[in-house]
Amino acid sequence: MGARQGVRLDIYPYLHHSCLGHAPLEALYLTIDGSARIARVELGSGGLRQDAPLQKGFANLSAAQAQVVQLGIDWLAAWPNSPTELDRLPLAPAASDFQQRLRSALVATQPGQTLTYSRLASALATAPRAVGAGCRANPLPLLVPCHRVVAAQGRGGYCGGSSAGEWAALKGWLLEAEQATAKPRD
Image (cartoon, rainbow, N blue to C red):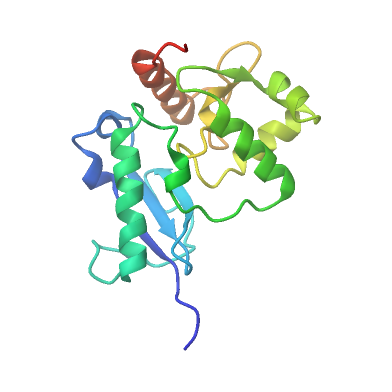
């Protein structure tokens, strides 16, 4: 028997009663790979990638895929109140060693906090542009919170978009939602 194909599912309808249900989004897709790991999160109006066939509901998912989708929905529905429990989600591996180091640094950034591209670049012993390119290539926005990385002056871009427009507005909304619910550090 061949390897199981990945699936793509719009989970935004399952998030309407959560904080993200009020986000300026039209859709939120999860792509689950053939190994039942979250491989991609797509924000916006969809259609950005066609890595896997679009599913309507859970009916055609394997039990393992359905379980991972439900874990993703539960995690995103709790956002931003408990977004640090990422270890319970099976994520596809990062594309490179640099992407894994960047992923670890982004996940370690607490909700409600931001850091600049240059500060993160210094911590990773790389250039700010490399951090920006790595954030732009992040296949797991929200789960791996690249929106917490900001420009030295202003918020900067998001998801490959410029520092103005709908992607910048979404980044601002995400940061404000996290800051409004951030718990003070001990």
